[in-house]
Length: 485
Ligand code: SF4
Image (cartoon, rainbow, N blue to C red; front, side):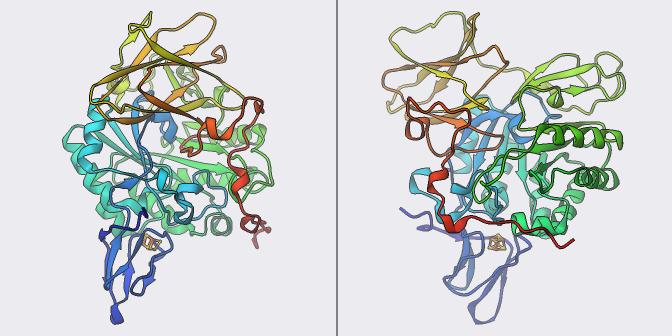
């Protein structure tokens, strides 16, 4: 099966002479002759009309936590249903989702079919109140995002859009009414590096981010700090100053740690002290909420009151623990506005049990290793009956079991996140007829496609997983020259 087997008409078409079409979804404005596809590989010209090849086609949907999306001030700790598609209008040299974002690498086994109705139904069944459009960029899933987001809204579900926002003004106008929460990744604040690193250009991203802020949407901004490229003090200053001048001091800014991936493997993770320095600089310049991303055991991910410095939310990895926050989002100690919203979503509706309530379950144990602090569990119920699976954290004092209910025939992915340093692993208990796979999640918004069973042997317990490096052809490696300015 090729994901290009079926297609449907696309929005933002401009018809040209000689049966050519122009796509006005992203600033690339690809012009396509009959039969051609655009840069993203998922939109094309069929019979002189612009089409999308990926309506309803994406990677496995996954239950995660809202912190996965660099959103810290909207419903901390809430469950989200993550939805990723295939193809991308950028080609970032360090992309951690390159196997699905670059259409030429997509494998049939990673492509699943959905309808707006099936997605809303899954979210409701698992008591999830936020859909997250994420992983590779949702811009190129435009029509499906809008149709599903409309339906979700009618069902009382919020929509979160995690994107580079390399999008045209017209496309953003179509999108804005349907999205509640934006996590915008400004991948570099320097125009030259933006082009080198992403193949896109910066100004449309900045324009879109300003427009989102002016529309009153919940907005958080992240900026990847790449080792020896954009992890310097001047870059942090430029980033903070742009947020202050164009958005506002209350907008959360996340400096995100980079790890070597895709075409940028010949380097190391961003040194922590450079990230910490960036955080200090941005706070000193007047930003009230500055965080570090892709780091686990540090106070740089927790939320503090910008007035009295009381700790409001403690975070470890992707988890959030409420400490001192009023229900209206203000500081529980001094009442200062701390810009948190939708705190009513924090309650998890999952049942927990001190003892396993069902017998005859097969138990699997996973040990945390290296920098890994979360895991995707993919399970499939092949029967026509409902089924329940259970999981719990492994630590000295055993925690309770939590249940996940599965519908007949359902295939489901969900995240398990490490809560603190005392936790050594996770345990999962399944009926014998449920099939399962485990995937290690290296960083936020990473959608792993290779399961532990395929990628790691028993004697391969290295501190840092090698992560699919073996498949990269030599010719794809890029060397980044110094920018001209
Ligand atoms: S969405 Fe795809 S086809 Fe349309 S302009 Fe962007 S890269 Fe080109």
